Picture 1 (cartoon, rainbow, N blue to C red):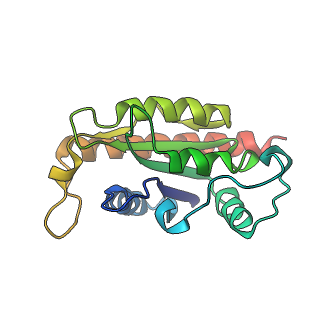
Picture 2 (tube, helix red, strand yellow; picture 1 turned 90 degrees about the horizontal axis):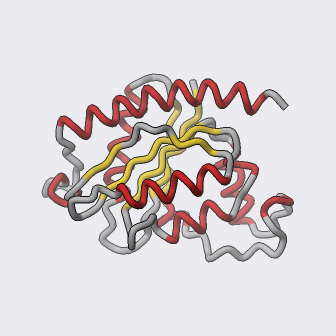
Length: 190
């Protein structure tokens, strides 16, 4: 079984990310291919990058960075759950990515994006894919894009996706497994 970290990227009050992250985490668990852990940036609460030495050197001085590094290092793959903010993804996720360099490398990522409107986070998805590539983390092409996310959350706070979203998630998880297998072989080929 591969270790999958589902990263919920939003931190502001009233956020929808944790609801969507829990949904995709449950789907991933049902495949029996992944040992899944949800990492909520709102709970982790990383301060704005405050390490004196560039993360390329991996000489972390703060406990929060060491803990973040250990969580990301142990992962074989990721699913990033992200809202779209100002045509991109949230600053909290950008900050979390920039804390580390080596820990992201040669791992596959699935992207689940959403928005309150019709664009379904696609513009944030494009920005995130490019930034992940610079960290040698490969985002699979098949993503999950959720428009009007608030309409898909019921009064009990449970995400109720439509058939199209569920099918997209199944396709993404299948491809994430394929890429995870391949990236693990690449990572081990030093």
